[in-house]
Figure 1 (cartoon, rainbow, N blue to C red):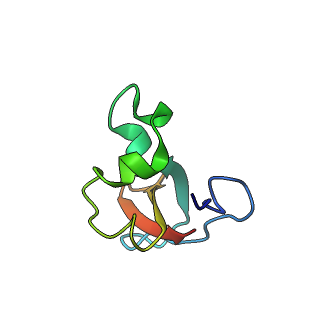
Figure 2 (cartoon, one colour):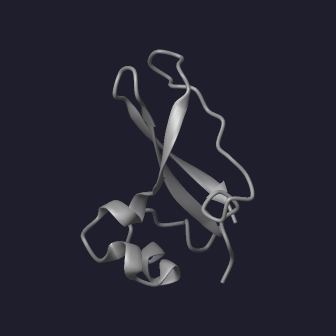
Length: 80
């Protein structure tokens, strides 16, 4: 199992909103928002069912970024 440097606090995401240019805030792993128990499921198992066909194979962690100004959200993939 690989580890995400963002989830584990080794690095931060620095990205700007594509709509308004303001900084985006990292809301965490996309799969943590699926249901009440998804945050407690094994990460590699969730990657097999998260709707992103290559994140498990490419060892990437999908993160949800949200703009607090305009409300736009984006998903980026962090290399593990």
